[in-house]
Amino acid sequence: MLGPFDLSLVWNSLPELFSGLLMTLNLTVFTIVGGIILSVPLGVLRTSPNRWVSGPIWAYTYFFRGTPMLIQLFLIYYGLAQFKAVRSSGLWFLLREGYWCCLIAFTLNTAAYTIEIVAGALRNVPLGDIEAARAMGMGPFTILRRIKFPIALRILFPAYTNEVIFILQSTSLASLVTVMDLTGVARVIIARTFSPYELFITIGLIYLALTYLTLWGFRHVERHLYRHLRSPKEVLPDAPVLR
Image (tube, rainbow, N blue to C red; front, top):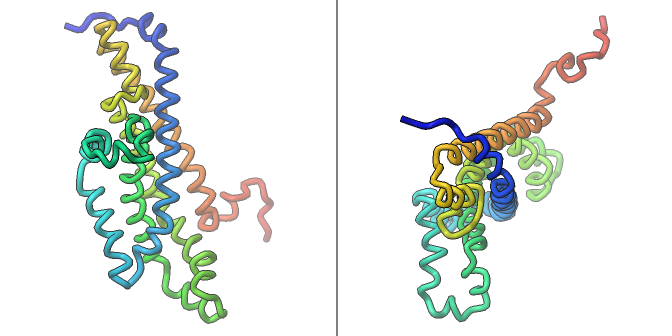
């Protein structure tokens, strides 16, 4: 039978959990930024009809979407260290650190998913809008910048919201390679206090709150992106109704 919930233990652990929370947010933000930097140009190339261009990108997304993120993290953290060429290279000062291995693995994984999200959104841009832009004399780059990207952003946004939440929750894997994120700090406290019940419930509630805040923020951005589909009364509720 479970004993009483020890609130004093949770309260005393908050400073340590806060430091882990900062690491979790750090990994999440930099993973999102790195994933966007990789996925936007590669997503455009993924829509190319030339198989020599889109084929290698498909192979990359197929591998990273078809294998568990934990395996990818272990391959980078443990696997690369087995090669002497890697240990003697200039990148070893990064690859020997769990933080950088996590950031690389998480970024490559989220980029693979986001590439397909971007490519799918670009393919679903209405053909009529593209033909109208061509009729006005726009070139391919101008069409991409002024027509395809703005429309694709509205299409991909709901799917990308789920990807961001997945990134946030997947950062808990970082604790398996010595990174003291929120889960890692909780595991250290549990090993010291033998109180998994209180700590796991606490960090579960923290992740739940972060997920809710993420959804809330993205929902407000989504309302802004789709404001043209709302009625004038919704956009300007205090505006007078003209007769």
